[in-house]
Length: 211
Image (tube, rainbow, N blue to C red; front, side, top):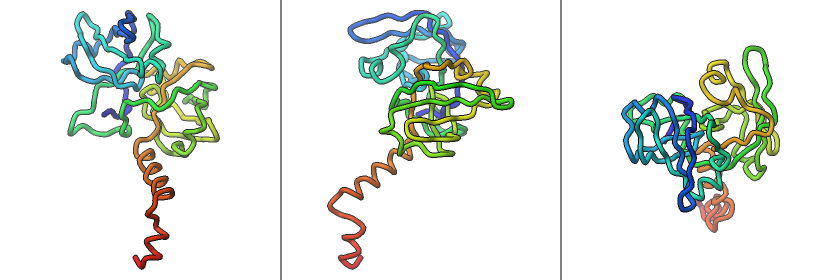
């Protein structure tokens, strides 16, 4: 579990393929902060497992499913990656609950200055429209953000100068692919609501039965 508050931006030193897996060696000061083999790190929002570390870098493995569902397949040597270690019990939840399981990849439509901040617009598959609401939470490349505006298959967020400076989002270009994770609580509520609509037991049936 993560919060969407980025701790560091890592530099991809090496990419290797092994049996359908992608092995990513990421250089970062985080490697000297007590990492352990087997722990989870969100890499641009995708939860990956540390398999080795040392020399100022760590290695994670991405499965075929992860490569297919995220932007990991587009990484190359020199890619900059937002990093966050897993949430510890007792930590402040400064962003929102982020699982590290990517729902969709979107495309940057534009990044433009609005006063001292930046407005980032992203398009995505409109099947996810019900999970995006104004002032709701979303994770873009692992960064916890608040949705400003939305329309079918499209949303925009505001990046304060600090966020633009300490993450990769301030570097986005039109057409850049990004990882999207929609609000976890919203997904559970939507599933429960749909089940109530389509299940055999409904509110109306309960009322007809005298409940």
